[in-house]
Amino acid sequence: MEQLSVTGCPGLSRSGAGVLCRAVLGDPLWIQVELGAGTGVIYTVLLGNTTLAESTAQQGSLPYNLTLDRDIQDLLGPGKHLLEILARSDSPTSVPSGNLTLQLQLVELLSGLQASWVSTRVGLGQDLMINVSVAHGTLEGLTFEVTGLSANFSQEEESFGEPSGTYRVIVPVEGLREPSGTDAEDTNGDGGSTELYVEPGLYVDPFTTLTLGWPEAHRDLGFRWSCGRCWAQWGRCVQRRLLRTDQRELVVPPSCLPPPDSAVTLRLAVLRGRELQSEVERCLYVSALLDLRPRVSCEQNCRPVNSDDDVLLRVTLQGDALEALFSWYLDSPSAEQAEPLPDACRLPGFWPRSPALLQSDTSTLRLVSSSLRSWGPVIRVRATALTEHAYGEDTYVISTLPPPVVPACTIVPEQGTVLTSFAILCNASVSLGPLEFCFCLESGSCLHCGPEPALPSVYLPLGKEIDDFVVTVVVSVTNQAGDKQQTQATVKVGLGDTRVKDVAFQAVVQEKITATLQGPDGPERLLQLAKSVSSVLTLAQGSGPLLKMDTGRTVREHVLGSLSEVTTGLRDMQRVQQLAEVLKDLTQHRELVPTAQVAPSSTEPGPQAWPHLCPDTAFPGLGFPLLRQGF
Image (cartoon, rainbow, N blue to C red; front, side, top):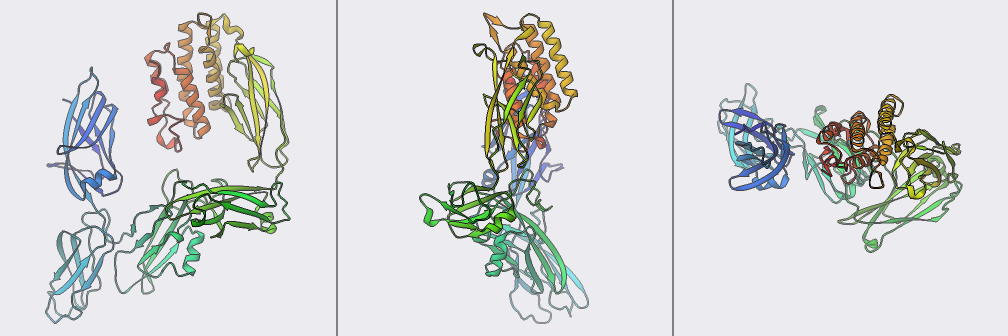
């Protein structure tokens, strides 16, 4: 039996009694395990006879994270739990197994600590009687600190998991004055009582009432709430006294929250007199599903827009239009123009927009001509619709730019092979502002998108024999407002010398790969070359393949191996999609030997390099499962 071990978990500690994991109830909870050997290892987490979780790891010798989600944690509840983890292999040739037990302690963070005297008058020599309670969580241990004129002391008490209780504090010294503070130590949480509590949490939808508060209720403390990364509704709600910024607890109703796709911060300054005792800043993320479908239309001064006249927009919503609250925002078009997130917002991959509120509670918006001129030639206006339980939005682009001119494009040379470096040249004016040129195949696969009206070096796939090997490239040009024009250019991409000389074709492919990796735009050009070469490898001519099987396998494996050189540069979705298409083309053939799967698997970058992968276009688990199809 192999040794199953826990290599990591929140609050990991080891003792003679075994392994203890300690986590806050509701926080992400993972247990990292390792079997030491085996393939296709199935890990099962048990509480008695109840199966909590089960998942499969490809390699038992590698650390694997078992996740216990919020539903499982709610089933367990706070406290200590004895879990058993079983490991077994589903491979008939590899039968390692193992099991272990561990203690999992789920703790609740305290919030809403309150303390009061049982009696406001205490006789000399009498003990102090204090009522203590919390709004959320359970008390396990408390520390009472008493400050006197001639002495200070503290007393610790156990609470046995109750949310409230009355405690007797023994006064050993005469002459003590009234205690200046009562402190509760959260012995079953990660933080002390000075942690700001947030309910229901920092990730909310626009229908939620948010409550933030300071857990200590000292009468000599003062509180001042403010926004760090602010939003329009904050100032308006403060002016209308919907937000009480001088209280220990801040309640933010849904009408005072920022719009979805926002990240804002709230700050609390805790004062004792004029002295700053503590300052806390928390990041609030707001998001929502787009369940409503409002539509913005232009009613006055529509395209072409005259910047000397006002623009009138209207938003409509079918069905619940009368119940929806409409708001209008001036939207930031890109991440570069959005205000950067403060340090308090550490959620990776979150791109918040920085909208400016223009008007609320109206279905129409009039933009005066002076605003149109000051905001520039392209203005993006976002209209949001909010009901009691649903949200939706639509964006309308106001542009004073003329539409782009249809480009005239040619491809040189006029014919070649999959190993020919073609150039696509277009005559287009770029004097009217930044333009984006996209060069795509008729299949929809794009070769390149960028600001230049030319693609000086590109590899193209083999044309279809039924079309006389003619390949059509669709060139589109788009301006800042999203106006698009497109045209086509054709070129003949044939077989050339690949009909007769396998060895020569193999040598030229290897030479091209080496030169491409050493030249400019290496990753993009290598993906083009790989797709072009694949079109020859998959071509069947007559009763058999165009190339001998040994040659085809060698070329295919060499191309796959070269892709490991490009993945570190794949940080945008366009390149990822290109790689997915190439891998699919290259690996759906039986001529590959199993070892050819190893090299492409090693091209896998770390998760930090793939922040926005879509499961429909990329590779689940980042393990390139496309490489295992067709075997």
